[in-house]
Each structure stands twice: as C-alpha cells, then as structure tokens.
Amino acid sequence: MNSLTISPIRAFSDNYIWLIAKGDLAYVVDPGDPEPVTVALEAAQLRLAGILVTHHHYDHTGAVEALKQQTECDVWGPPDSPAGPYQHTVVEGDTISVLGIDFEVIAVPGHTLDHIAYYSSAQKALFCGDTLFVGGCGRVFEGTPSQMRASLQKLSQLPPDTRIFCAHEYTLANLHFATLVEPENRDLQDFLKWCEERRRVDQPTVPSLIGDELAHNPFLRWDSPEIHQTLVASGRLIDDTPDGVFTAVREWKNNA
View 1: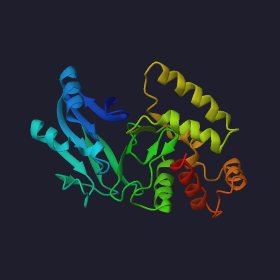
View 2: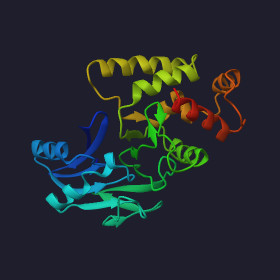
View 3: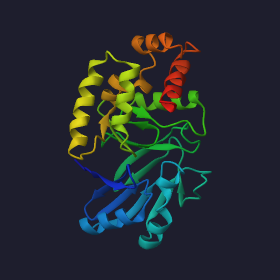
C-alpha cells in the first residue's frame, strides 16, 4: 500500500501539528509554531513540501509564513480566509495530492466560517482541525449551531474506521463532560478509562475513529434518548429538534 506516516508534533499547551511523511518528504497540517516543526523535520531528515491549513486561527496558522520562507513549500487553505491569501485555495469537492495520496476537501463551517477538513479514503484519515475532537467538538465562534451540526453530520457519515486527526488534546475534559450528558453510556465509560491510562503516561488519545465517536461523543449523538432525557430533566432543552439538542449540549459545555 502507498502508505503515509502520520505523527503528532506537540505545540503550545495542547495543540497537535500533524506531520505527514513519505520517503524524505513531508507535509504539516495547521502549524501554529515553527520551532517544533523545524525540530521534527530535522530529527527525521525530512524536507517540507507542503502545508495544509484547516482554518484561520493563529494557533493553526502562526508558523505558515515562516515555514514557507524557510522551505519554499506549497500552502493549501480555504479562500476568503483572514489568515490568507494562500498559495493554493481549495473548496469542498476539490481534491489535492499529498505525497501521491488524494485528499478530498470538505467544507465544515461552524467553529469558523472558513473551516475545511481534508479526507483520504485510501489512508482512512481525516484532518479536521477544530471541528471534531475526541469526545467533543469546537466552540461555535463564527457560524451557527445548525451550521456546526451539519458539518459534524457530514463527518459522521464517513466510514467508521476513519481516523480522526484533530488539532488539540482536549479528550479528558470532553469525556468527563460527556459523562454528565449521558451517564449510563458504557462505551463512554470504557473509553474514558482507556484515555485516562494514555494520558497518565503522556501518550496522545488522538487519533480516534469515527465509529467510536458515534458511540460516545455527545455532539454526534443528538438522537440519543438518554441525552434527550438529561436535557429535558435539567431544563436545558428549548427546541426539541436535532439542532436544538446539539445547541443545548454545546451551550452546556460552553458554561461547564
């Protein structure tokens, strides 16, 4: 198989910059800080060929210009982005080749309006920035809750063995909140224990799988009877629709 190696570069307090490598070439996804990227490239003797940007927030784009100047790499990102313009702009439906592997661009507005994700069916890999996290989702800063839910629904329909390479290690906080929303979910309880063990030895909980997220992530489970019951019992459910359930859970998490 024409396989890529995907590994995390840690940045700031909890960011993951994703390093995609094959042979002596590499791409990075959402580089906010140039120094750890440069260190990782030198340690692995890799040459940076490209950068993929999911959205404009500085912790995902702060290193783009420096790395481009250092390496003369290509940069792909969304159009009309406050952090752009990028050398190559891509929109939903576009396909780009990353070290010989095709990645499909998916529009996922909500966290920001320019947010996109990159998906490879061949690699079973999704780079989703701050849209979907392990056990959670991004805050809705620029879009609407219904936009965000629609974006998450798109991602939830990817094959269940798709690996989710999100951009932050927020997992334990997300899962502890999820146990408030759906306390009887045994899949969630088992997964939380596994993640706690990973973090105890300072190992990433990312990537997770779409199929697993569907079983325990409350932001993908707007059709869960228990979540519905919890929201009703706590007086949080104002609008008894999928959008209303998602909005209630997101607002609860915002204030948790």
